[in-house]
Image (tube, rainbow, N blue to C red; front, top):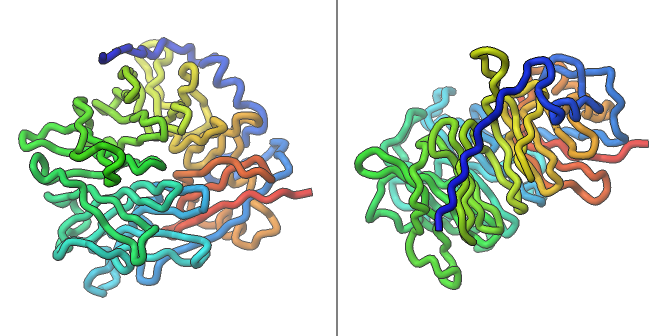
Length: 381
């Protein structure tokens, strides 16, 4: 049975936005977002910087997801004709255990890519080395291709093998979002009439999904849905209307929430529209656990959430115990690469994993000046 509940964001007074906003005061940096802070007492943990790129890459396009092994996936701008300018997007895999300084173009190592196509983007990676992504015609440029096909790439095979979702009977445009540790892949697809929907597929016969399972929910075309190990799905039905669906029963709709990520406990995060006094509105990062929490931490969106209910924005790590921490303040001053980050272009963090057992902090991944960056926590005296 479909259970629908509407979450209407209540008016929040401008100077006292909510008690949840005040809880971030501990350890919150006071400087300009992305350029350092100061005046805060920091925990005895610092982040060491690791830059990474791919030979011939023009620019890191997306840093989409990372797992507990530090394997990170996304897309990069690629120079197809050798003129030094970006022509298209291609998907990459970064594996620090293989090479901490370089990632690899998935098109160079994956078998089973259909002729005339290339892997355009890798959108998620799970703990068993399965990558969700999509392919496009090899002639596609930086613009929007007219054909896209959702795929799964299995790194456990040698060479890694690509499998296309068998959705050709109803769509020619499908974009993979997330993939859980059971191999359930969630995708957004477009119908012939221009409308959008979501489906789930699993390539393992034992999963019992012999064809794409349509969720029966209208989708936002720009939504990148996510799925956790409980088979809970989050996405958007409109620009500011999110949903959470559970296969065990029930769908919830959340007006005013743009959902970005979900953890394996069912907690999710993203961007919320918050009403202020009069007719004014603001956008803030939110975390939804038992209820909605908005946090005024200097950025608009919470990009990722882990099992400890930490979340990240492009500039801030919100540690559930310690509150909001400016990421630049947390860089290890003994690491010479931290100076490059502090004095160079802004660094943007997009994903993280769970806390490690030594520092009780997560590893972070993003980009800096067009190259990838991984931040690893280390204990300090």
